[in-house]
Image (cartoon, rainbow, N blue to C red; front, side, top):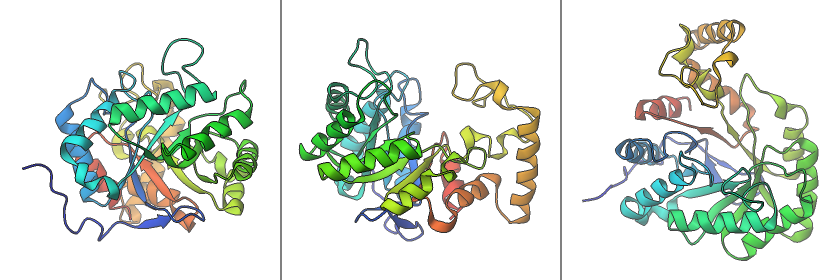
Length: 311
């Protein structure tokens, strides 16, 4: 007998409307940036996905190059979905991104129509899907006209390969321009995925205003600052942490004495509030309803449970 979802899985999760759309997203979503590539335990991946869904997390976010190796996170997620969770597909929001290097040559990176359409075709094949719910352009392309990139997103929706489109890592000005183009094309922008945490607050300087004015949702990635806003670094840098390992997205030199001092001070506030530091950091990101969802990563089920309890 395969996976059977918990019956009362929707009872405790909060679902927020994404901008002015008809779509609601869970306040906590799961990103597959780390721990779902071919070098990790497949059984652990299944446990992370199953328990997330049991906690009411319906949104799973991927990208074409997530691994390592690039593409393997989508392959593993697709395998879990097809073999264990196929009957729950209509209860899930599945997104993927394209915009960073995925294959060699001039057509495997950035934001041309050639790259975006080809990338999504590959992603759908890896996951065994007819469509994704949200397709993002992962970063602005300084060399491709924005009109071409947005036209590719519009084409993808009209082809039925994605229900909604989003952008990620766009500035406030670039977002306003993308909005205008997409509105003229007739495919509204659903959501923006920026990096946002207590340690990185750039979206407050203009971007949030653009999104609120235009009725666009947002989903914050790295809301725990790559794990720095957790209890992992209270006593320094553990050898098995992201900062303690080579070739990660959190270089050791970013975890400075000043950062650790702030982490310890924030942890004292969290304890006074009856929360873990991670829970307080997530509650902070979701404060005032300006962010639709916080996109967490996890290597253990206990982390997912802790994060969901922030609600």
